[in-house]
Length: 290
Ligand SMILES: Nc1ncnc2c1ncn2[C@@H]1O[C@H](COP(=O)(O)OP(=O)(O)OP(=O)(O)O)[C@@H](O)[C@H]1O
Image 1 (cartoon, rainbow, N blue to C red):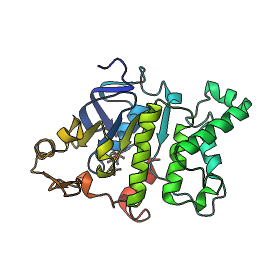
Image 2: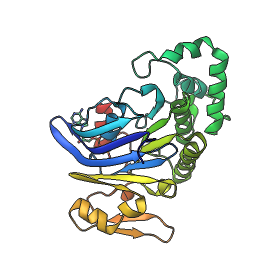
Image 3: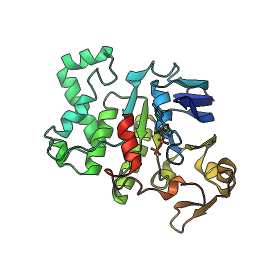
């Protein structure tokens, strides 16, 4: 049933710089659902977020976000871009970072109710407090964000993306460079947000394992194709072998973690890929894209 879909892609394709990145993507996400976008490096996962935000047009197929063309309902979307590092000397407090989410100029367009928020300071204060509480950041929200840990910063940024009560939350690798306990904590938080707030979440991920038990569906993109459906149907030896066009094996470790073996840089294998933010080509490329 697509009627209440928060977003819907039908046979969608995207090109950048005249190069077809992916095609044949079908995906439907309803309120409260948690969906992951998986795939190897450079396949176009972040680009899918851009298509959903309306900053890049689909080259084929149809894309609907909150019942409209992408970009038309920006004020109902919360967006957390790929990780930025806050300088340790940055004095702005977490609570102020969260409040920035209420500003009308995050998308470069004035939002009608932003003025109402700025004139109703008390309502804004209340919502900022509420959302900081929701992400469990009350204990450190009044400290300079540069002094907060990576996990604490990520919670505050999620609060910023949530402060306007979005119906859709787009997260680009929010677990990137966090240690395992923090990955588990943020994954559980995102799941709680889906359930409690009935927000639909689309999250780009490299390692599916921290979120595996929470996911309703995944879309797995490889160069030249894509598959979507429940993780148990998509992350399988058969489906990935077909998608990659080369033998790939999906193994389940004793602790339930999925390991993809034999594929050209399969997602479950590179959770530490972003460990060095300063030297690898991936990070450099994303710096250039922002
Ligand atoms: N504006 C652009 N012009 C040209 N090429 C682009 C542009 N934006 C992205 N690309 C290219 O499109 C490809 C997909 O980029 P994207 O960031 O979506 O990949 P990704 O799957 O998110 O990668 P990663 O896993 O490394 O984060 C890359 O090869 C990138 O260099």
